[in-house]
Length: 273
Image (cartoon, rainbow, N blue to C red; front, side, top):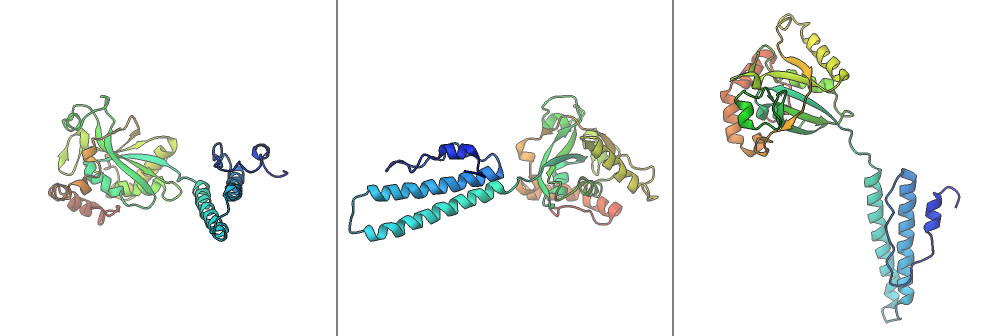
């Protein structure tokens, strides 16, 4: 038939024999037009199957109810196929990632959690020499890694530049080799860029801050190429949810929010403080 994929015509062999279910095999869509054509074809085969079953079943006193039942089944099947079609037609979200180090990753996670366009935030380690480091190894300062977060986001909803803005407002850019009450290179602040575009955006964001006299020549936050990111142990992920009492005791005791307010006024964050 003109206007339809030829392979669909080859599959049309008439209604299936009574008692044989229509097959959905090989009806995986490979394009929008072909997907819709296949869904229509499958719906028609379901209808033909129901008709064949109706003809094969001996007449009973309930014959008058059969057409109504068949119609209801067909409506359910068509609704189901329509839902599948809509799901397949919806494009998956775009994905990009950014990696930031800003001291304790329990707190850095919360800066991005809940932000519109952010898909996930994972605590981990980056910038060191040892493969698959443990928390104990990193926190001792012997591996060269920094506690960090990997932010997966939809660039159609939030830009990398916006993530940079959130990052800066949640670190102390004046503090070298540490953040707040945590000292050592494992707690350094850094932007790990993945490509030239991210590097340029990071440098531009730093340059924009340095237009203000209080930042000029004083920012020690690193802007460095990314390396292998190792997700931290599961008990560290979403720590603010798993152990809120300990999290808030640590955050308050470390003086993080007091220092951020001193530098920035009000941190720009996801709201999970």
